Amino acid sequence: MNNLAELLGAIAGDGHIDYCRRYGSTTHYKLVFSGNFTEDLDYYKKIRRFIYKLFQKRFCFYKQRKNELTARIYSKELVTYLINKGAIHGSKARKIDFPNWLGKEEKLHFIRGLFDTDGSLTFKRKDNNIAHNYPIITLTLKSKKMISETSSVLRKNKFYLCTCYYEKAYDRRKGKNYERHTLY
Image (cartoon, rainbow, N blue to C red; front, side, top):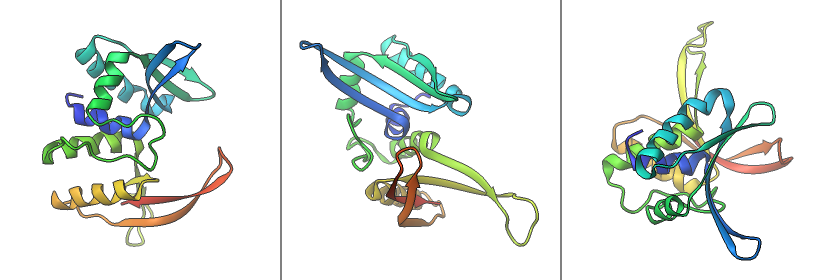
């Protein structure tokens, strides 16, 4: 990872920035990534190397529950810098957006970070073929605006895609229905 825009995209995907008061007077500033231990560890190591280049600070990795990975770093300097560059702190599911300073090339790097964390690649059947050999790249988010803007940027760069808005989905972890938007 050699681009701040990609890091911001990864934060928009699987990252979480938070700062809060603890024990009355101390404020804790933290950046956390959550993902799958076997699938996401290599990417989080890439993020850790990039952050070390910027700030000489390292993530701590934790394996939690079955196969869940958490990468966490406490740093006021890092959190303040990322927020000033456009990262969203707190709940971001419906608020994510491209930072204002991104140009055409940087937006593609941001999308790469977003896809690396929240995107997926599957293979489907095509033309009555027995094998699943037709690749489908998917990005699913709660933010309709982000799917729409991402779609616009990719179309301007000659990507062929389709979008589906207002899909109904069920979150087994929370036991609730929700609305999502998908880019294929």
